[in-house]
Image (cartoon, rainbow, N blue to C red; front, side, top):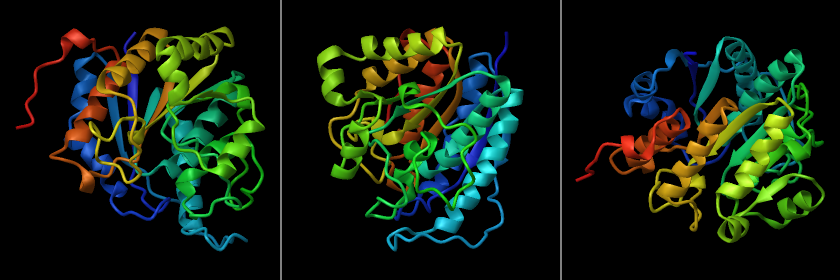
Length: 308
């Protein structure tokens, strides 16, 4: 059966303070994402860039929070676009910073609830992103989506999340930068936490397969959120939140290949690509290659490429 991939651009960089992520959707297109997917047999529909909803007055009692109205507007628009795309195929949200997941996952969750099936979330990221607008000290709302997704308090300015995802259906995979407030929040949850210590000890395969087995047993939808900083900055420099010790080229492709083999992925975020920080498109091409692995390309199918 031919899969339909629906590309939705989310040119957002207001969820943090370093400009450049708004160029991400264009970079993925220039790097050949559509052609790569079509070469793997997928039908691809590029719906262009989503436009944010009209701004409305919203406030936060935390003075550090910035661009709240813009973030709420993006979340509302992406939720609507995501829910519609889920009815037609597999949405791929092209970011943009990680605040886009406040909307993308909301849309996917609304579709899952309407279908009467559980939603699971695989968070491939260096960070846990479990702050709320009340606990963030930086005020960067790209660090809040996991809290919103799981139904945490403090998101009064945002639309009510349509069906909060129970903590035991969320897997944080590859995290290695967690501040004290986030650490305290994680201790009180049942989220599956596969930090780099766990992955160093157990490898990539066993923990991921355990989580995927749970998705399969529940006949769930699976949303994957792939942050550029999941990767080691030595291979993916185009991100404003670099954290050493990330996944290697082969580890990242292995994760994608396992996800393809599972046949469970129903939606995907590609976030935090900042082309202004890239080296001749190197990170954008790597992310496109990873999506190729997720869609079925094998390691022996890769052409030799020179960056010289």
